[in-house]
Length: 251
Image 1 (spheres, rainbow, N blue to C red):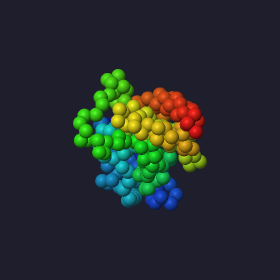
Image 2: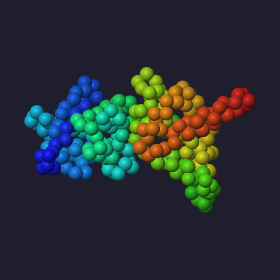
Image 3: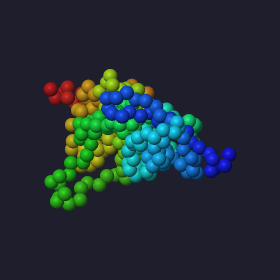
């Protein structure tokens, strides 16, 4: 079959409003070499006609960098949560199924509300508190060996794929998921960030914290950036245990 006549079939799970029921809609697009899922969605946006030949509303989705850096285009493609910009059509079995990640509330079509993640990051103080210290000169240096593995943790793009893959993150639990736990390890390792180390560990010891992890290890297998999430969880398990005994001894 020539490139001119070859087509690509998509089955997209859509939802018009947060309250409405989801439904599937099929699209058939002309094939182009090098296509990814985002370029296919752009083609549907340009010409919103489904496989039945009916005009339809353009599919809504999120994307930004198109370089697997921002994490905005996370969706479930052929049953696997991943980044749409890195999902090449040539490597996907057809028909290509595309759906929003089920862990998060749907806003419309493939657009989801990631507030759950951001609330968790706020709770664990996932930042370096430098306000008021900038005029004190250079801060303490991080050892190169620590910096190397900390850099790997800093690659997290808050895409939500690890939460989607985790069986312990669902509508029945408040478990914050792997990403915020790994970020606690990152910021607790920073020479300045460690001043809030105990606060972050205390946050992990609450009901929605680290005890919700079932060690399925789906997160580390699905992470687009290859972040050692299970290693971080193990380290935070150790640190929260030490913190627990310390709290008991100081009561």
